[in-house]
Amino acid sequence: MNKDIWVYVEQIEGKITNVSLELLSEAHRLKTKMQRPGQVVAVIIGSQLEELISTVQEYGAQKIYVADDKSLKLYEPQYYAAILKKLIKENDPHILLVGASALGSQLAPTVAAKVKTGVAAHCVELKISENDQLVAVVPAFGGKVLGDILCPKNRPQIASIKQGILDKPVKIEAVGEVIKVDLSFLTQVKTNLKPLKICREEPKGVPLEEAEIVICGGWGVGDQDTWHYLEKIAEKIGGAVACTRPPVDEGWAPGEHVMIGTSGKSVRPKLYLGFGISGATHHICGMKDSGLIISINRDENAEIFKVSDYGIIGDIKQVLPLLAEAVTK
Ligand SMILES: Cc1cc2nc3c(=O)[nH]c(=O)nc-3n(C[C@H](O)[C@H](O)[C@H](O)COP(=O)(O)OP(=O)(O)OC[C@H]3O[C@@H](n4cnc5c(N)ncnc54)[C@H](O)[C@@H]3O)c2cc1C
Image (cartoon, rainbow, N blue to C red):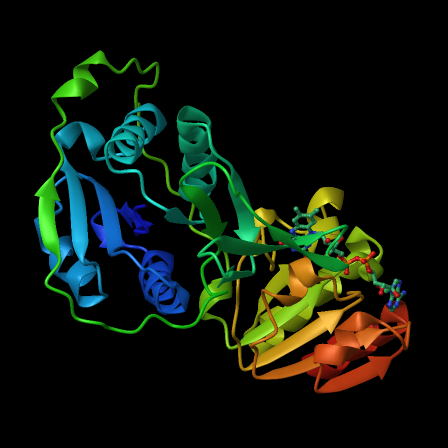
């Protein structure tokens, strides 16, 4: 039986995303755990991809399917999913790894539905069990437990994982046979999408991924007025404001683009300051590798203290105004 591990290599505007390189390294790691391993295979879809192939080879793809056409320049879910479906049907891979980016989070389930298999979404760890089965570890019940997701009967076993959760990618030079995908069938694929224009919104302040200081607020911040103190502190000390899920839902935080965790971003700042955060696995897995972690919570048993270098037991409503005043001075 075919035991190949496939990686969907996502590119945006001719640049391979970091998570794709992380997944290539992860595919090699998983391969070493298998009793009867196959090859690490990459699939890349887009337009004018020639220059990207050497990078995919440098990170260890032993075979690369290249679907290159100007109709694929922008992500078009119907086309991209149809290409992956065709390749999967023809080659029957064992595992397919996809980055849990905005694009990958749509593409993975679309492909899974087309080839009738399952997806373990937003995994925090991947393992191989005795019979070369993929074990995808996913937080469950509000992040309080970790569940092992198995897909024993159908193939491929699909898993998506966020950027920054896995180890940094390492180069493993491979010859990487390049196979051009015949795209003539695309004329029969129906699409009801037409790009009108590309709009870009530049984020305000320091981008979260690049910030050396992250000021993160959780449900314990309590209201919009108190939230403003986080912004004030971040502005004064040159940090970026981030959040857990509840402040996005409440509308205190500007949106999901500043959320940290399995469905948000993974960050590794030099300093992470957490205010009113309980420490659910969904959040922890996106910040645990920060340099210095300082958390403030009124509950001395909060889980967040287990991953913190310093814990302050206190009321946010009292601490935040004092801290904002101190940094202003
Ligand atoms: C599929 C899925 C994906 C998810 N993805 C993410 C994700 O990417 N990122 C994420 O963050 N969450 C995610 N979640 C939600 C996650 O499980 C938790 O519910 C969330 O992280 C909890 O946020 P919190 O710590 O801010 O809130 P809570 O768990 O409610 O904790 C609030 C904390 O604040 C403290 N507190 C309250 N008032 C005060 C005060 N006045 N002073 C001091 N301390 C106070 C409390 O003691 C408590 O510890 C996801 C959930 C699911 C189901």
